[in-house]
Amino acid sequence: MKLSETKLAGLKLGPGETDKIFFDDEIAGFGVRVREGGSRKFVLHYRIGGNQRRYTVGAVGVLKLEEARLRALRALVDLGDGKDPAAQKAANKVEAKQSFLSEAKSYLEVLERRVEKGEMKPRTYAEIDRHLMKHWGPLHRLVLSSINRATVATRLREIAKKHGPVAADRARSNVSTFFAWAIGEGTCETNPVDGTNKNSEYVERERSLIVDGEKPNYDELAAVWKGAPDNEYGKIVRLLILTLCRRDEIASLSWSEFEKDAKLIRLPGARTKNGREHVVPLSDEAMAILGSVEARKERDLVFGSGKGGYSGWSKSKELLDKAVEINKPWTLHDLRRTGRTGLGMLGVAPHIAEAVLNHLPPKLMRTYDKNKYEKEKREALDLWAAHLMRLVSGETSNVVPLRA
Image 1 (cartoon, rainbow, N blue to C red):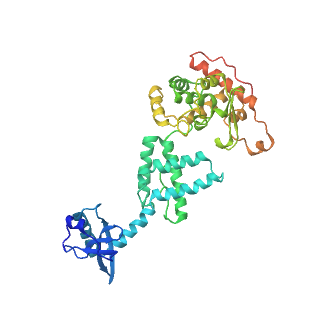
Image 2: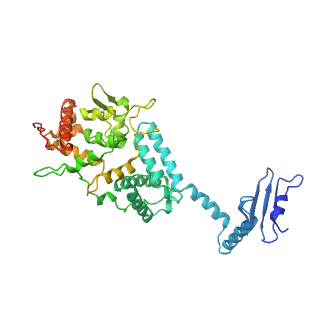
Image 3: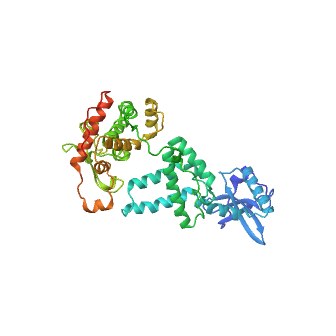
């Protein structure tokens, strides 16, 4: 019979029938398969290599009759070209299971188990998850083995343009490790990240906001301090300048890590890069900033909202850059290098300045010197804060450098 939309609605199984195909007179082998339970699908029967094959075109109701006929005709054209439509559909299903997204989810499950075993820090996992799920989102539907170097390089340029060169390089590193894992799983043969350029290679890596010379110039650092807005982001920026902590150490700071009476922050090893506890003495200026932050009920985190700490980095940095006239690009991490440079110029001994940054000393020193230099760290940060306040007030600093 010649199928029509009206006839489709009236197709029913006869007594005792559980599965029947109603063929269409217009296209040989094309029809509607009705099964017990209500399933109704357009199908195409054909022969290839002497064997009977069935290709499911689509569900009735989802596809109109004419669209189903067109798809059946396309399949017959492919058949004439030597292509098996049923086999191709099966191959497409396999490819869908090996997409970037599906493989990334499998990879993240492996990393989740490492976090549970204590082999990976939760914040490291969170960064990898963010890069694979967000920054590499445009590649999610692509079959992993089909992604080439040009595709990766193009996406890296887009990430660098929107989020900055450092973010692009971190996204590059994480996706490269992911592809290396996928090679081990047999879902791709090569790593398309190999040979792509690092974006930060075009940005000065030793950036300091203090120009060291015969007469040090603190104008850029003073400009950042003054330009920092009176909000969470501005307070984080100023605390970074005063404490020389890493960005996330302050952004994810908890009230339980802040010891008000002792005037210090005690960061557990799980929150530091080297896995060692870091005690950060707080100057009066740093204490004043934390004192201006209102604690919220049932929230231990000082900054941000939701589950994590502060997260509005990109937009806030854009606004700060507009407010501060600095010609050369700079990052928040440069504030840490700037502070380290400043401590050295104030006469703070190198091993004390490195302790302020929580950098591990040389192996031999670690073996024999167990001193944490907490008193010296406090003196150094108090000296730095006093020096900084003189600079931002426009006064000539009369801070006396520490003796070596």
